[in-house]
Length: 197
Image (cartoon, rainbow, N blue to C red; front, side, top):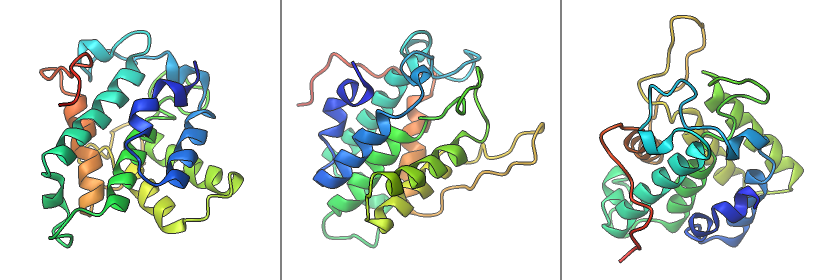
């Protein structure tokens, strides 16, 4: 099974077919470790159900699932007050896409531990793949990349590096961060066996 097959349900939430196809192609080019590692290589920063074999896949599914519940409850519109009538489906597609891809290079290209700059690496990777796959919607690519770059939120520095990650500045970026954050909490377990109502 390739990555796009593993995320077939989640990819189905992306309404724009070109965006969905692009995200699926990017998923299928990720390093093999993406399917196998846990969400936390140290085991310290994510709940037990996201550790071990396939844990990063489960974490990603949980983050997307949390956003899907916000969409269903129409809560996500409060993060984007400029859209005060109906939440823009393009924006939903951006959040779903960024969440599906945000940890795609969690360990860089070859490392065996979490790369602190993985948000920057993944953002650059998505831009490169948009050229390679001839995905021409630059606004969507920019928004996806900005949301990926800032998904760590306030945890944007580390004492052993000079790298400073951007923090979320708009509603889309904040949504990606909050969904990733909730999916990483040890006291919250996402139930995969409960169907959407």
